[in-house]
Amino acid sequence: MMVNITPICSQGFAAVCCGFAALITYLSLRLTYNVFFHPLSSYPGPFAAKLSDAYNGYYAFKRQLHIITRQNHLTYGTIVRQGPNKLVFNSVAALQDIYRNDNTTKPKAYIALGPRLSIPTIFTAQDRQVHRARRQLIGRAISERSMRIFEPTMHDQIDLLIRHIFHSIKRPQSTTINMTERARLLGFDLAGLLAFGYDLNLQTQEKNSFVLPMLEAGFFWSSVFLHWPLTRKFSITLATLKVFRRLRSQYLSLVEHIISSRTKQDKNAQHDLYSIVADELDSSGPDGIRASELWAEATLFLPAAGDTTKTALAAIFFYLSQNVHCYNTLANEIHSKFTSGSQIRGPSLAGCQYLRACIDETLRMSPPVAGILWREAYPSEQPFIVDGHMIPHGTVVGVNIYSIHYNKEYFPDPYTFRPERWLDDAKTVRDAFAPFSVGPRGCAGKAMAYLEISLVVAKIMWYFDFRSVAKSGSHGSESTGVFELLDNFTSSHEGPHLEFQQRGEHCKELDST
View 1 (cartoon, one colour):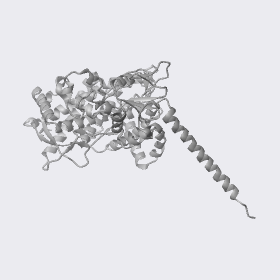
View 2 (cartoon, helix red, strand yellow):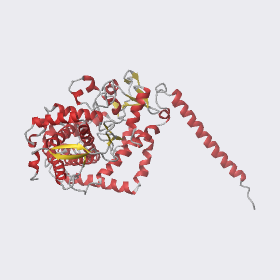
View 3 (cartoon, rainbow, N blue to C red):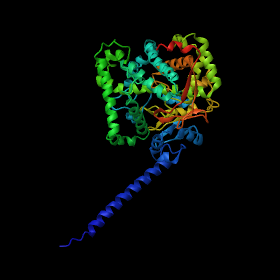
View 4 (cartoon, rainbow, N blue to C red):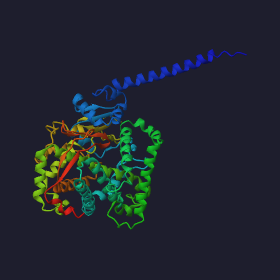
């Protein structure tokens, strides 16, 4: 018996056509609304950005979102619609209105940061009370007072870097030092010691070196997920990749080992984060922190504390190697202030004004986080005003740090490395400066960053002279004078590759080490 399947096929084809037509109609209506009738339709910006967050996701994937955002400001002005529900600003007023504001919080997209997504951390918490309590507790580990106690440990680690440079000089064949690589190893060793008194030994051994590519990949995908939240579902596919899954498993196992090793010790055995939060573990008080929350905080504290300073350290050596006047001025300041390397200590560096100016100018031109830190307003009956603009409910706003740091209105001649601009005590310069963000959710680790950078730069310039050696593929651009960054949520980069020489007789004290 023959069955005529033509009607069945026709019905199926018709259903597919109807479904496709319905989809096209929906997308057309949605796009028409976004472009012409959306509350943000009057704000200028790239056409593609008005349609989908895929615009931000595409440039986040290319690690160029900070660059394209600045170009958009130059094209469209101070306020750019850079997403269906996103506005990015480029003004001091917006910086204050968005970030120095207790009524703003991080969007849900920040859940992309970290492997324990169900547990809010100091970096991802939306609730202001949870964030405030967590910051007060964990912030004590990276306060100025804490850094004074931690400084001897910091010296020990920095001295490992100094000896590495010294031994590279003494080799028969001259070698160069990749400052990005060395700064990153130093930063993560310090982070492990500050968090749980655990020495990762990255500067001297390769055992834990898998941490670095794992976290680099984590930063990259977190950036994509943050700027294009729809792709968060892709993380499930990503987690199935054998290489990524293996590295992630190794990293999480290492974190568990670090925490378990520390919790077996007396809480005062080390001055670290654990010694500060130990009394609050499983506390019933409002500031109490559960063991699971400590684990979640640790997975983000290590990369946050370890990765913050690497950009500034690599960049400052790039800028000094490209600017002879700045190099000589800073060298003279350090050489005239000290008579031995052992005198270089945190308190004694406080009077080195040109050193601080060089650091600030480096942080301006090459900020550790160069992109957009998105915020949204808490539900409220009060209007949300940013730089004189009433922001519709549901709108996500932010300032692109790279854009405002290169805004000629605040920083004339922005592509020139000019530390002297910070010696004039110009309020406008300070108001537009946000390498660690500003306000209640700004980076709590400024004291640690400034101390580490100051000590490393001062010690290296005390013992050595250096010059830049061009390497193929380096992201440091001698033609523009800018140390180029890739926007990876934090900043990724390469080099500079430096060749060092002993400075006079100053290295004699290193011969015995």
